Image 1: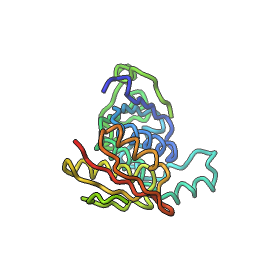
Image 2 (image 1 turned 120 degrees about the vertical axis):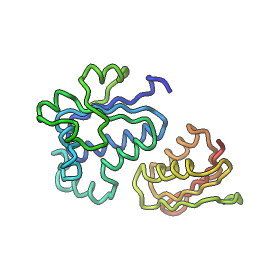
Image 3 (image 1 turned 90 degrees about the vertical axis):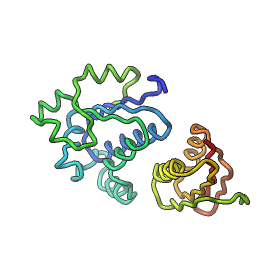
Image 4 (image 1 turned 135 degrees about the horizontal axis):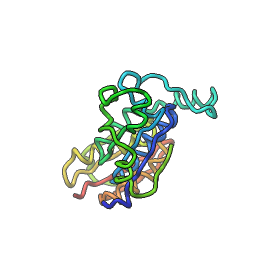
Length: 135
Length: 79
């Protein structure tokens, strides 16, 4: 499997709908044998904090009440569970952006075990040598 | 329906995408070469996803039967 097959995701948004979407993409890529590199910044990083990963992170404004209800009714596993399944299925790595870590004044111990470590942005680009998907 | 003997049957109806395919992948990994696994899925995405994964993973799609509200996929683990 070459680097050209890699899915490189930068997760910025911390709402449950966008994280759910990112988790589904990650699972899909892992199922099809593609390596996945996930880089967490800003509000997505905040959502991966161990003490709040399962809390309600809301949905994007365009969802409205109807959209939020439709999402809840779909009964999908929580996005954190999907990321865990993706890691079991294939080569999926999740790193936290060191700059965002500093902004929140948190350390690696504050993050959920799904996160493999803390990287500077250059380390991410060392691995993410193809197109980037930004969510 | 095929006369192939089914090793394991999975009822994934009601599971949202990508649940049924993930369940199938788990069953294939746990199984032995030659096993025939049947998956029942009501997820529309499975109609394209399961055949796509089976081809990519180089297993054999023995049969697909579309019923009212769900489809049955029969897959043989070949490697």
